[in-house]
Amino acid sequence: MRDRIAAEVKTAMKAGEKARLSTLRLVQAAVKDRDIANRGAGKEAASDDDIVQLLAKMVKQREESAKAFDDGGRPELADKEREEIAVIREFLPRQMDEAEAQAAIRAAIAETGAAGIKDMGKVMAALRDKYAGQMDFGRASAQVKAALS
Image 1 (cartoon, rainbow, N blue to C red):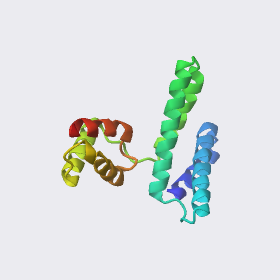
Image 2: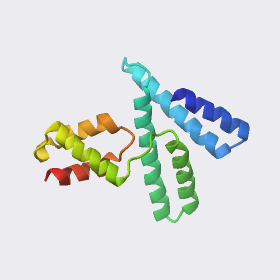
Image 3: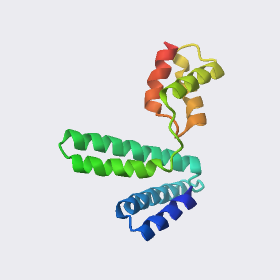
């Protein structure tokens, strides 16, 4: 994952794509920050799964910012955030659509033997282990809760 990001930075530099290059450098800096934090905690450098989670968090932050800019009457800033989202999403696994997410939730419920709402944590943990970066867990949480109620 790191090599791919570094290669994309070089490509964007050569092509003179300033906005893309800026976003890719933000991604590199975030990965480096995570590595430094891990080193301070005595852990190894961020794995590809850690990077995927980091990128998903970056996308979510930018979606919230874009919404805030739209609400505040600043469409040009919202568009900039959306451009950054598009670049970051290139490095994330394909997102599940609604039907795939529902099927994954049903499978996780069956797999964990969840019977009620008290088993929601087990189901969510199973989904996070299997589908990190492929699913919106905020939306999945509500769907799991509805399925277990």
